[in-house]
Image 1: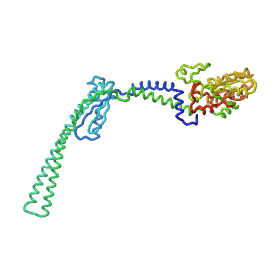
Image 2 (image 1 turned 90 degrees about the horizontal axis):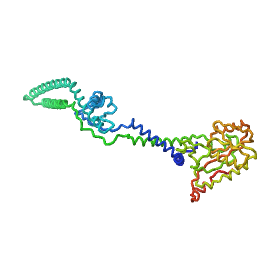
Image 3 (image 1 turned 30 degrees about the horizontal axis):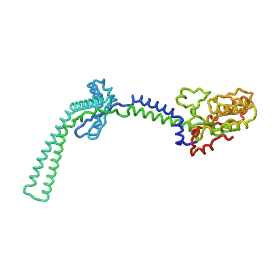
Image 4 (image 1 turned 135 degrees about the vertical axis):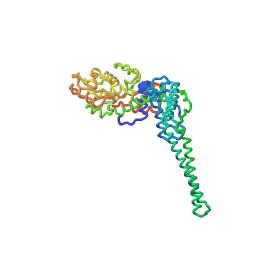
Length: 443
């Protein structure tokens, strides 16, 4: 499976074979997501808007937004609310600058009522504090500006008087092109000065309202918690853990180094592969010699998830015929039938092979990590293993253990579990003929 591409059929095999594990991972993810809601869920959220009247620069709006979350404003709001200090509100209050000289103050809290109170109180304290600052620092600047504007008005009045005098002198009984042109230029100059004075007066009028701020109504009481909520985090955690579990199984299948090719298995053992036999694997069939753990009982992960499913009945898979052919090909001498621990299918097949051969064969179980063969009176070893259950190094270790005991590997029998999908007496499907022909077992 290392070189196979990930197909939808493989995903279906994972879902069928490991659905309990995936469900357990999804439940764990839901618990983790629900637990993370204590940190990630903001609670209830609402906003209050403050309008800054008059023309404002962008930098000034940003400065006012920073003032709204300053320690002075938050301390005053916390004191009025009776909820600790401003530091307790710092993580619950944020500001943004909207279009139209509007500063939006957002507040979050564990309850909708508290969130509304925080937003309203911070907005009110912000307006009060900004008004005080502008009033205390702006009086001197406004006075100086007014004096300069008054001086400018006096200079403009003197200039207008001088223009009038010049116009009267030019128009004293003389008419020429030069005098007409001069009078026109003086009239245009007077119009420009009057327009500048109008602009100055308008500026003087609006400058008195630069510091005006107003709260645009009370904040709305939120009717539901802000995202991400506890159900959303729980659902997201369940989906995330489920997907990670599925991808983990697929990644493990892609990186699996256990051998499935007969030639590679034979080369690792140092002996020929004598037979490949399909045996039925019943999903609910217990392992009589194994002691399943609580995890295996709950999750059902003690068997491979990628067992092939074929459209035949269990009775159509007759392994005895192939076992007899295998025994007839073996030398008539005392052999050890070697099985690795944890290989239920191979142990079942080895027991049946030994039963057909009589007392000549002895079933021996070895640890695949550190195989040791102690029986040195036998005349050879027949290795029985499930297809795709051992790596090349594990098989090399088994061959070396046999060599250390002075025994030669006469051959190997590969057992491939398949899962019948049709009950006895059921009508075969379209795939039944191909599945029956594809059954292994021809020595």
